[in-house]
Amino acid sequence: MGVEKVDEKFVTNAAKDGHAEVELAQLAQQQAGSSQVRAYAQRLAQDHQQADQQLKAIASQKGIQLPDEPNNKQKRDRDKLAKRQGAEFDKEYIDAVVKDHKKAIKEFDKEAKDGKDPDIKAFASQTAEKLREHLNQAQKLQTDLKNAPKTS
Image (cartoon, rainbow, N blue to C red; front, side, top):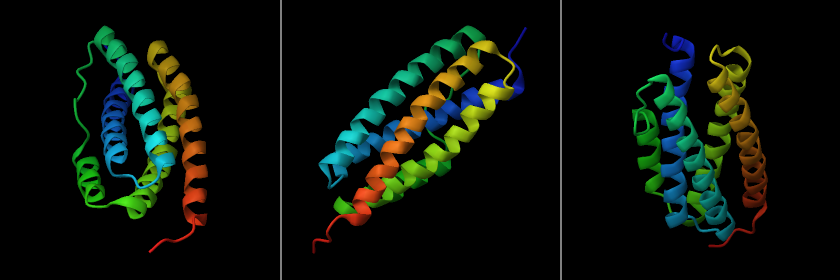
């Protein structure tokens, strides 16, 4: 008795997205110009690593083999962002976080509603709430960065 393809695909994609978020957050902790962005990135990394552990436990129970790195597009995005520094980095990083979290919330909400496996549905539902918190904080940072005085 295996897991439905739709649930397995969700778990696999969630793992890739989680790895990408952690890698970007670690990059932000090194390269962000703003202490607010660095603090946010640190919290994001911790939360996503925690979710990753939960996901690994579920996947292990269900016999799902998880990827241990982001997908190729996510790697390219990270490499592009790695070339930025300071305020330019902050803006691009937070914009990426907002975009990624909006996409993730849709996927997690869909799984929570339409998924077949009760454990995976519960994980999706619980994690979607945390993703909404992250999105709200990122949007606030996005506004703060836009309104920050320009320094040359």
